Image 1 (cartoon, rainbow, N blue to C red):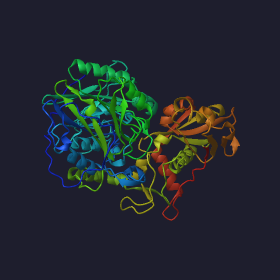
Image 2 (cartoon, helix red, strand yellow; image 1 turned 60 degrees about the vertical axis):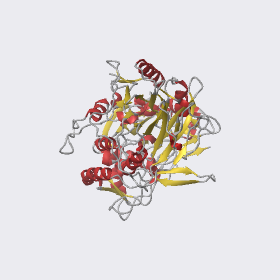
Image 3 (tube, helix red, strand yellow; image 1 turned 45 degrees about the vertical axis):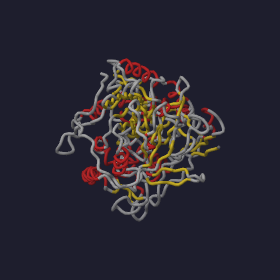
Image 4 (cartoon, rainbow, N blue to C red; image 1 turned 135 degrees about the vertical axis):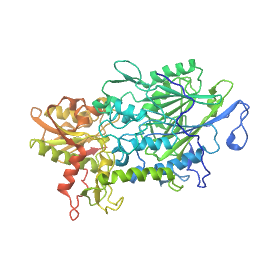
Length: 600
């Protein structure tokens, strides 16, 4: 049922001591127009008149259980310099995020913290091993007020999401500590996720923040295409509705209740023209520097919605996109993994109960690691790491250098495909090839030791970070025609505008011609298995993970395979491969990503 709430009754009052460290780096990322007549910008020292009140909205998205500082490129952001060059900054980790948010709130009596989904799922071992209970505990300590669901909140299904919201021990693994898991202090919003039988949202569609005479409503949605990127079991019995229609519906409902200041939390996003977090995506005009699904969504959401907090693409932007009435509206995203947070000022007009949109301003700030660590987060990480250590510290292989997960074809993706082919042949010697979805390769492997294991040692925790989904390795039969169609589906149909290039085992090669369009980008005559052309009439045994075997990521043909055989989980397959093909004296080298010839 829809709900309004003044605050979380279980929460303690926020009282933060003064922190001496400097605030995070910031950039003006949105068009800042003049304040309404008679108002003053409090940042310049002038008090706002009684009619206007600045409300601080702090937001972030796509944390993915990254409690510890992320490593490699996942733990850095790029900053554009005045001379046009860029520099990288180490960022992220909830010990630092907590400090930055607490600093930002100081002096702001009206402050809300919201998130744009994917707080959990695809998480490192410290969180994922415990079904993300540690992350919910950390978010409670961060004083998160509200979040939308993301697609990864459905990785373990709606029942598990409900448990994260309400609390209780895991139905299979039980309690991890002496205390029963208490659940989230904040509401998860799922306005466009309906139970197929009842037709009603599975969680609250919206929530209202209130303080004294100020009310701000929040509507939360995830991307409509969630079923296409989550395992079928995770979304079983659920229906996902259009984001715009849903937000507009509940915006009207909030207005009928007298709530005129509205923020949409949308787990869908866009891609700015620059990877630098401080790139001005409003140059030369509002929203000109951003593309992707969020642009059309923003252009069609009712003007009654005052700001959009977005996510999903792991990009950083703070810009404006015109609403249907032609007026600019703030649209933000804070990258991913807790490396940034967004600080948005919403100027509330007490006379109208609405946000003075011309006064809205927004900026992304880096969660630098140069501030003091929040001691409560350090204690939380230490406690859960102690529980995870017996599992996470176990060596599962040895590498001679970093194995990157970046690129159209990545060394890490190739290694996983090779591992799944080898394991597939253990299950069935007739297995011909393996294909791995790029979205399932969450990270690469780094040569440098993360702890006491030593350089080049791959621990179970590191492997878990690469493949955290617990998908099984599945074998299926396909005709040659179907196999060619699978490869064509990488760049056509649902994947035409945003190709998803499968990572192939070493014995499959072909040419990807990016100068062409649609399915023609996969050059049919170039497709070779063990050096021979694909026989359209032959049958091929293909190893994939259970997500792909169910037709995930738009690969509908992979959902049509026959003679299914289900094996162990995919991380177990990787572990078996590393243990069989590497040792301390003979570590495995990164595969050369030359299976796909790319023509640009």
